[in-house]
Amino acid sequence: MQKLITLLVFAMLALSVAGCHIVYTPDVQQGNLLDKKTVDQLKPGMTKHQVLVLMGTPSVSTPFDRDRWDYVSTQSHRGGPLKVRSFTLTFNNDTLVRTEGNFFAQDAQQLVKDSKKYNAGYPVNETEGDKSKSPDDVKNDGGFGQGSKDGH
Image (cartoon, rainbow, N blue to C red):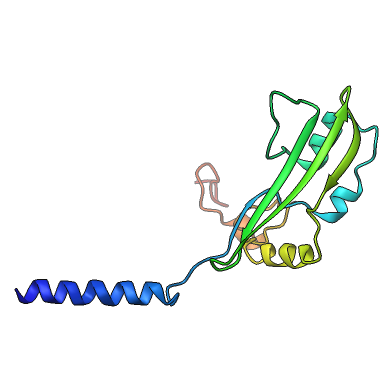
């Protein structure tokens, strides 16, 4: 009986803590995160392939209207209200003719800044790998087939 009472008290305590939003709720960002500089490079007359290379794959590309691409992003800050942003590209004969949408609202720069805190910050042109070697490490690598200075 005492185990049942303890379990009930613990369950009620857990429910009350969860109801008070004391439990951590992470920010949730889903969809395409577009950069204003990238979108500014869009020009009427670009082909679908050029737009795809510049912008990436759209969130929504319906089989019923192949001349419309939608880039959609949703964000919820700590369980708050869901913010939906959309950016629509319209094509005619595989060439871009129009862009429209509310993707870059006033707080879009804040969204980009917030998203950077989740990046690891790895350099894009990394060529050295995880371990950098000093000249001393190269001489005495310890690998097979290196041999020693006296030929053994």
